[in-house]
Length: 393
Image (cartoon, helix red, strand yellow):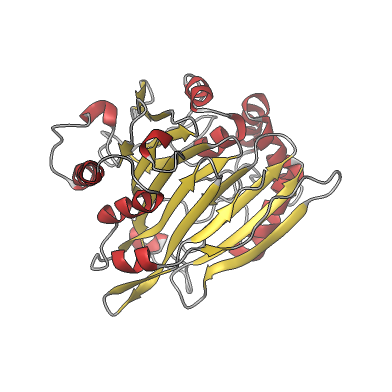
């Protein structure tokens, strides 16, 4: 797998930026850029420009047309509580929610989420490289998104519906160009409206979420605010730098919808940090990257530290990444930034899981290079070459 990935040529899709047009939504896609019905995964690219309300409507229409989405129902007071929170704290999302609501007008339909297959915790390995540690001077973020290849029903011991898709079989590469809020380019799954697994915005801010597999508790919490996969999207909308993100995260309301997560945030200046909070939501911690390559896997750095780690999957991956970066010494080339994460990718022999994508963000060039998993065949992985997307300025 590693040799195949390193030898793959990047595919430049030639996707250019576009500007919001008053009174209309400018869309490109969705179109399939990788995979097919015969592969594990079908990856779609969608760019949408316009007002945030128009963007929300377009995302809802896309969910219906391509994901067979049907809105969940909730009690109206709960919907009103969440929409009021968005209006007060995240007006870009409040406008998008209004756009979704214009598509689903039935009583009790929840317009605050376009959820599809969101229920199992990811396992990931991510490294942020400040420009001082990369040969071309560009800050970069490299992340593996490791996840089960089963359907949600299989993972939860339920009977799957005929033709059920695997939980992460339909990711989107989204480029969103709103009239208010920063432009962003990100990989979305599970929730087409607010979900972001990793991404970058026009100011060169990059974010990624990772599950906390060593959390003391996994009991979901309730109430208004952000959840695991909307916090990343929130930061891309509202923050131009890691400094702004630190301030924003000091007191933003947050809840767990399924599992504890932590987050790595970095910007093109080389400033980075990992943001963590305890499962009871009572303690928040910022672990600064201090201008050096910053590694994060699936354990809280604020609890376990970065040295003298115990044995276990997350700890072993952390040590292996640290050792590989140290072994190479000096400044890493962009190719080395990409290849380093391959040493902790899920091996082809693994049963029921894979590195579903490996994404590399260049925070100066505002590009995403990403390779997607397409399936196993004869004990080997089939993957796409690295597809390249560029966020239009």
